[in-house]
Structures are given as C-alpha cells and as structure tokens.
Image 1 (cartoon, rainbow, N blue to C red):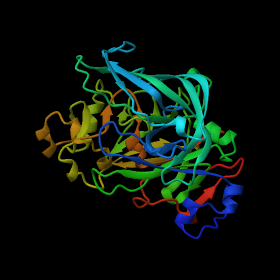
Image 2 (tube, one colour):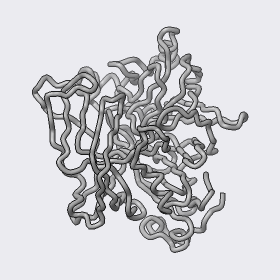
Image 3 (cartoon, rainbow, N blue to C red):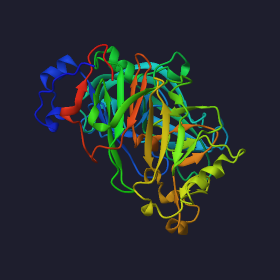
Image 4 (tube, helix red, strand yellow):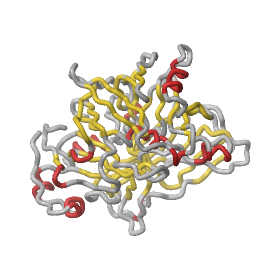
Length: 423
C-alpha cells in the first residue's frame, strides 16, 4: 500500500481544505456518520442535497444492505395502514420537501423510473425521475458534484392502522453502499460506482468506523471514507474475512459467539448480512437444541429474554462498561481470525421498547434478538472497523470503537489510495 504525504499542518486543515498534493494525486471523500440511541436507529449522515440557498441537511441512512441512492422528490405521498404486504392502506401522508430541486442551480433532472423494496417488501418506494446534483456532507471534506440519486414520489408501508391515521415514521433518504450486482435490486443510482467512474476517487474502497461511546444514551460519532483509510480508527490487525457472496449486501460466514468465557458455534448453517441499515443484531441461536437457554445461562443471569428481544437484567445505566460479547470471524488466511468485541451497553434501546414503563428500573431491552437469521446491524458497527473493496470484493474487519469521541480524521495516520491500491 503506497501512502501519500499529507501537507496539512492540522486536522482542521485536512478536513476543510485539502492540500494540493492530496486533492490532485489521490482524491477521497469523507462523510461523518452517527448512530443515535434508541430503537430503530441506523447508521446515518447529514447530507445537503442541491445548492438552493435555504437547503438544509437531510438525515440519510448509509446502508450496506442496499445499493441504490434516493431522496424524496416534490409532492411525495406515503400510503400506510395495511397489515398485509402489497395492499393499499386507508392512510396517506404528504412528505415535506427535503430537496428543493427547482431552486438548485446545479440540478439536472431526467426521466427515469425507480422501484425499491426494503424489509421483505414491508417498505416499497417508487418514482419517475433521477436528479444529478451536488451533495455536501456536514463536516465532510467538500461537496460532491454531479451526483445522481432517484427522486421517490410514492411510498407504501406495511403498518397497521385502524383508520385513525395517527401518522407514521419513515426514512428521509437512503444511500446504499452495497456492491453493484446485475439484478433489479441494484438498478441504481449507485453512489460508490459513480464516485469511481467520475474520478472522484481513484480506488473503489470504503471504510467505516465509530468512535468510543461516552455513556449509555449518547450518540455515537464516526466516519465513512471513500478511497482512503485512517488507521487510527482501529486497533490490532485489519483482517480480511471471506466474502460469502449471496444477495444484495455484504455477507460473511457466521462467527463463533463468545460471552462470559463461553463459546457458541450456533447450529444454523447460515451466512451473516453486515447491514448498517438494520437497527438490531439477529444472532442465529436455535431454541430446538436449547442453544438459547444455554446462551442465557452462560451470562450468569446478566442477560434475559424480554418482550421478544435480549435484555440486560437491570437498568441500562448499570451495564458495566467492560461487559461485552465477542464475535470471532475466520480470516481468508487459514492462520488468521479476528474477534470484534461489542460492549453490551452499546446495544441499549430507548424507553419506547418497554412492555411496561415501570420496567425501566429493572430491565434494559437491547437491540439484539435470537433468531434463525444472522444479521449484524448498526449496533455491531459501533465496535467494527469495516473495509470493503468493490473492485475485488474483499472485506476486512478490525476492532473499532477506539478513537476518542468526536474525533475527526487523523493526518498522521491517514492514507489516500491511488489507482489499483487498497487497504
């Protein structure tokens, strides 16, 4: 890996105004990311769409579980109220305008149909236009011009409502980070591919990380780097793990699961989706062979089943900072493996997930469940340093969650990749 010299004398100089050598010799893009405390939170970034004078940042999901890029367009409507897939519900709500393309001097709109499905078809979006425009990440290293994204104008959500139509929650935008495939689920627009094809980055890489957590209930901060790496954001080795292929997204082979000195090789023969656009981790434990009960027993009563999820047996504020669950992934090389240790307190949910309000003093629901599926969602990312090269399909893991909270790029450990280089 060839590194490029950084002429910036301070961190602020690196982020706000790139040195001429870096800008010309090895371009990259940096997007600060965050993960909020609570239920149904995902990895997000604040992106401003277009150049309208009153344009405001839009909270955009950065989703390794999908590949397409969209934001709501003008006059968008969401239908909801049905408990069944594909059925029109009794309720409609208008989506406030997040992207004012009519007042963006850099917008170029084209007619192009789009259709996206998420969560087993529980969320379906469609539109008839694309826009090429400037996007800017709050706290990033500059605007990205001529970026293509779809304009969604209709959404259908599977969410039961008795006809009262009290409202619904929905994503404002999704930027897919999964690699491109030839199926209809990655029809585009494709942010990562566009970055590379337009020369905005020289390498088809992305790395993502979060910084250390401060305390339960506070937001995690981190970053996504396209075409570059910052080695201060992880500790220990960066280990390549086998790419398990599969459908849209990043898939790896299931790990050994370690907690309180016990190791579990789960009975389900399944690969695992690494999905920053999913709020919770689903671990493949089987109740039919008593794996679930063995898992809870291994925690000596610290973890329990509660309201359909795994919970800490006590208030969230009491979870010890050093109490963690480890995931050991085999490496590409036979003699290598990598264990990602996720603090249990990182999994804490908000009070909205309590069956009874009085339970808050005695139990802490977690963003974790035991099912036949294997998904490592946004909480897993709080302790993961992820590296993915779309060029050769390689995936690498390291222990993240180590940089100080709120830290930005570190000039001394930053490297931008030239053509053909990778992590």
